Length: 185
Image (tube, rainbow, N blue to C red; front, side, top):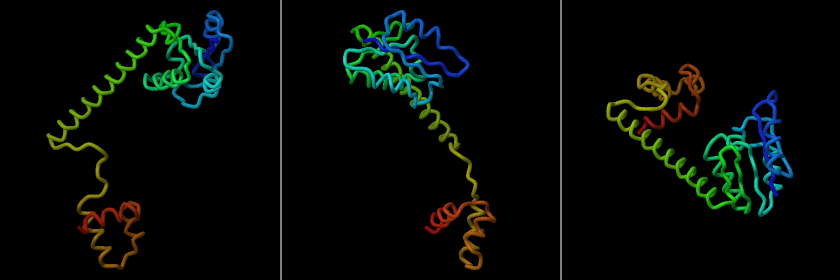
């Protein structure tokens, strides 16, 4: 059985063209969501997946109707494959019920993984180059060495409550104790 899924991002958008195409290719049931594709909780998609049985196929007009990222698409199609369910995207002409369609989808997955690896390698190389030039990433330090010395002096004198020290330096108690413990060593 072919089960269709359609999605538009906003309530103002129209599902008609997707629904027409899904009916035209022979979908017996069609589920539709009107919400952003980035949301993981799409009730009609979940209902469609739950309705699918071994030998069925989930059909979408266009790949981006199912998910916003290759990673989420691969995860979903893998889940479908585990249920022995096929996947068809009409615009991209992907059909995992055929060996050629499975190959194309796995090539997409391999390319996505390759792209993630390249991005990770470039990021690491950039961070290494920045460190070599004396630049450190991350959030700028809020507490200076001078402030640490002042806090230690107040704390060691035992005259000012910790909460007052924290208020005067604009930090939390946990940050205060982290700084004090770190600099006691």
